[in-house]
Length: 511
Image (tube, rainbow, N blue to C red; front, side):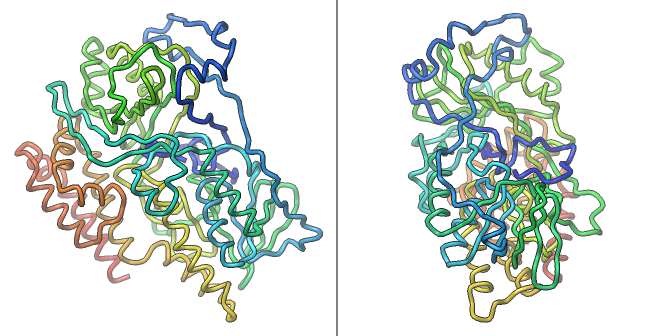
């Protein structure tokens, strides 16, 4: 749900479970928001006359349509690193120019620290649609990077008309505005960029060497890996034989349609209705066991972002199954897709163990464990955590003492993952494990009770800002608000995840 929000330098070798377009710094370009149908006709021009609205697919013609946008990189004159003249030595080397990497580079360089950002294409546009709660970006001064907001969100639970209206504004991030702002900050603060892939990182006591695919070596006191879920540079505890992640998978399209049934003043956070599968008994049975929902951002009556999403599954749900369910849903809703402006496939590992803390390489973004284990949210939290990590780096490298080596790694990692944050994450992981055990009806009952909580609690849970005590209170309150069948689900299906959470909390507390 960070588009739910998904997000390279391309480190070798990528995990077979991960797709390169999903990361916080993927290289696929994106199209700016097109606020009206009239405007996209002006931008796309005669392309419309060449589109074939094929009806050969059982699941609707939109699966046969191809996205029409073309790659578009930012037009910036970046200050490039010249290894011969700069002597290729920096305080901090950041691997990856996605949201996490560029945000951290901007924040660290504010302190006068010498930073180099390494990426195969630093100016390429980020791929996926990012949605955030408006108050999250407002709280960190990035609200001007939203290109569309809705005054409220809604959750459709079932065909009986049960709907939750959430009085919390929601916004779509303008990827172009956000990247332009962060890049401009980097340029103003003296960040250097180097266009290459990082293949290897070597460490000495007080210095690390980054080896690039063109043979260049860059040296720095600290290397920060922001290269995403497939990173080979971030290590996990050797005792962890299986990471045991859950997976969020989604197929999304920014589409021009004849019409759609959604209110323009509300974004659809979740639509759990399944009447669209009435004539698909096989798909309906599978959806009952491993449900998907529709996430929708309506821009006008003819332009809408639609994304069919599996909130969390283990093993990962088939991508083909997700697309078929989406096609059946759109057909049932009477949504006829005329053209696809963008499409995206998102695959996000959720939960699992944290990286080994500390270690020689710092990480932030998808490979650092900051993805919300219950929801997949990450972008807003990453934007908020980067200044915290930057301050810890500046305290070490910006001081006259020049704290480096093991002390540096320890302080920086603990700024990202202090003990309370690690304890809190166990609660979020418990939420993920609970959702994994619920079928469609159980999931509906869960969210019915969840959004009946006081806004302070459900908002705080989704935004990862509740304290440990507040999370414990949320669990008790959620049980109190739950229906009897939902309480039965919790009592019968959650003892093992609960025991695992309590054991992990005990280990973190004494560790």
